[in-house]
Image 1 (tube, rainbow, N blue to C red):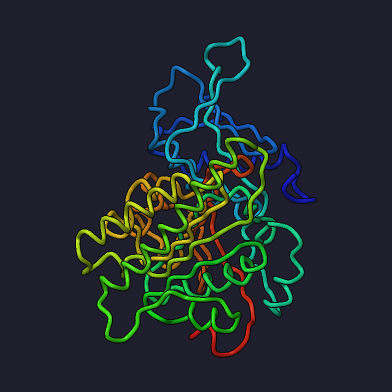
Image 2 (image 1 turned 120 degrees about the vertical axis):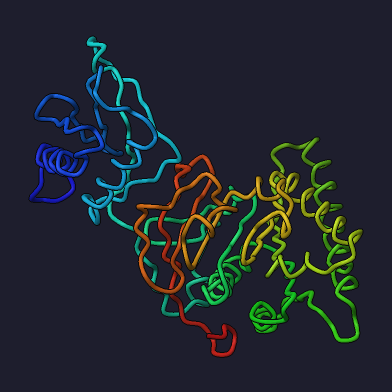
Length: 365
């Protein structure tokens, strides 16, 4: 039940009326009044039930049009979860005319932002490996492979990264790479954590070589842990997170051999690190093939895109997604998130990053 004043039957009728009025010319005037289609509310979404044969084509275009209509009609009681293509489901019916439906999964309510008065005390109160992202949405770090945070300049990437660092420091060892010697370095100085950053009188290739040496040691650790797991598959390890800010800045203008070594090490860590609790947390304006190898992108299972959301900005982290119709709140630190594990649906959700307060001078406005 969406509302105390709206029963399931009333919600079905409201949705049907919205579809009858809006679909119009797309399905040549066929409506529920002529028994051309119906809809049915379920706990986890609703079904659009076409009656076949029909005078309209049941395809991806129709599915996305229904999504646009229903998502607006149901907001803010429900958030429809965007699908990449038409989601057909078989129905238990004896009549072949109505043995299939289009399913539109939803979650109750809309995304809500966490407000954290004191980030340090909030982080210290966390007793497990959960990272709260929004109200009613958390990440279990034991199930994270690697994380990507993408967004244009000024979108709030550093703010989001600082939040992750503050929570990760209590549950993971950290190796921080900061090519810009900026926000992550100030945060690390505050928490006495070493940072790999550029130094005067050193070339960029020399800097990336130092990063490669650290990544190589991480790969050796992975291999040692794999050998332990071979004999004891239940062995638990401490998390190790390799944090790289502005990945794109590392891969541009570097000696080809060193860049290839960097990409190779990233790929091996991304592919082998999951079972051994070694993770990547990567931040970049974009994640195209020049910033990270495709094999690394395929291993990312927490995807965050903040700032301006359109087909162009989502093409790398969400290549199959058309963001049209997803209601994204206005404000800093908003965008999209996808968590790919066995607990969350694979759909992309509107994101409102937590608002928090921390010591002055760490995060630049």
